[in-house]
Length: 132
Image (cartoon, rainbow, N blue to C red; front, side, top):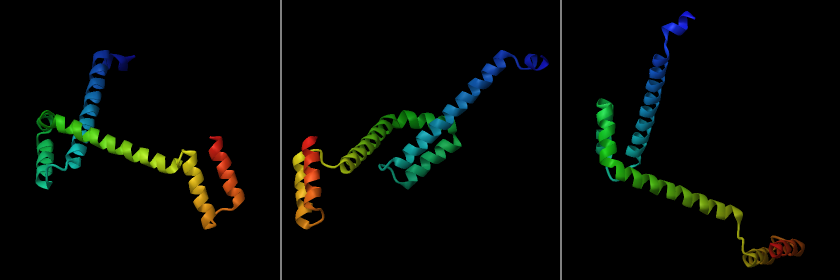
């Protein structure tokens, strides 16, 4: 019971608040450093300057970067997400293969002509393509 009186509720709340604030601060640093290294509109000296500014004056550096580069950060993030989505879509299309039955039959016909597959395999692929 003595330990409960040594660490009252408000101190626990304050400790949790400080921990959450520190976690958010670290998260902001990761986001800002990732954005600095992702940028292609500034060179190495510009990136080094921003990093030094953020490290030497942490709070001021982060807030100035967020205020000065908020629009650019948003645009770069959207561009990166669109590129990742485009890559994923093209990968899925390449793995899934053609969904059009005529394309599947035409590809199977080419394989049959080249001797890669037999007539029975061609018939099987044709049946599957026409079945849907």
